[in-house]
Length: 532
Image (cartoon, helix red, strand yellow):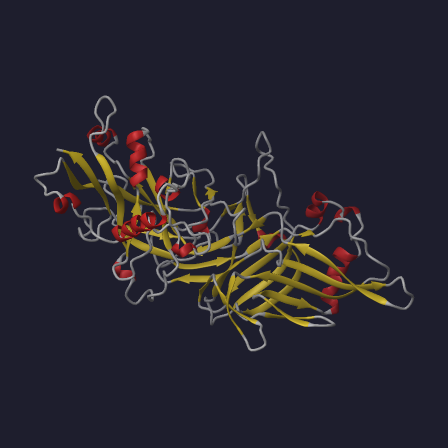
């Protein structure tokens, strides 16, 4: 759906794009008044503010499977309160046809789950030095991390549907337990704990590379949660569960295996009511559990090294516990709009903007005649949004929202907006700098955001679209546009962008209510051209 300007030469295209960027952050002027003179032109450029109503929607029961990454840890949002995020993940062997030799003995078990990280330098020995990309909260504080065997079976298909469609799982974030909703009942993972794999009462996220030592070499791997288990009593569990049964029916195929070993439960808990939270890359090929063992060689008296590897595949669930004790979400005022709009990730809150609270037909009549011909041409439409200044002083430091964006989506179709689809600034490498025409970055001085809806409005006029409500959520990756279903929605919002669930931070915006000062009130601005 991207627009291609192949007919333009590079210099012209670059010039036009530069003008577009300049226009993004400048006030709009009536260009024809300087070129032709207002009295000599046969058209005029006008500006108007359209009445809108923006109100809050509290979120819960959000789909928590099928996410692009997963949160683990403790995050205290200075404006909202605390979230504790844990993970329940199925694992599968790299092969279901493993052959174990005679007299196997486990040497060690290595659990490795990578963070998202970037190489920033190399030391004098040529080893990479890293910076972590997705760590939130108080990194000087530790959390308690426990890894258990999970005994709850995460099924793939939903037996309560006629076509056995995919089983989704949903947050139960207002609970005080690590639990989830299935659509028919609630599951508390603390009631389904099997063997204790390990407990680390003082776990801290680290950007240091991990030392990997073998018999012949020492290498360094990217930062990750990495534990090496060597205790004989602990190794007995891995031997009896996997090595001793590797050739048995239970480990011979996917369905048998997932029912036999139902995965791991990574449980996070706060220390002194504080801690940090990190996004984990469980989809990485380096996310694995490696059982290192030796077995008899075909040469008498010799032993050989071997491995049995488990990967983090299948269902991965991200249950969270929210304690938003610093803010009270208001009952939404859908008639006059709310004073403040609360955008909070992790099953927190979003805002709904009704673009035409008085109906869309009068607007269409202003731009189209009875024959469907255009009477006016839309040049630009955007929402102008200001962050509540109260949260900028003493609550957040200047870097708190460095990577956060406001993401706007089409509520009716649970999809991106037409402006997002045609945004030529899409950047697949650096999300914080992606789609800055349709979804502006936060102005660090004024706390202002612009959400462009020009093509969205053109579609309403020209194609008789009825997409008259826009959802606003906070996101730390506007390139991640997959949606997450809401369980048993009772209004028009049936799904939200999944990115907001794994975006820990929150912000508070000025709303559209007339009580808000005019220079800070959320507004919908429209610029158009009409013939004289």
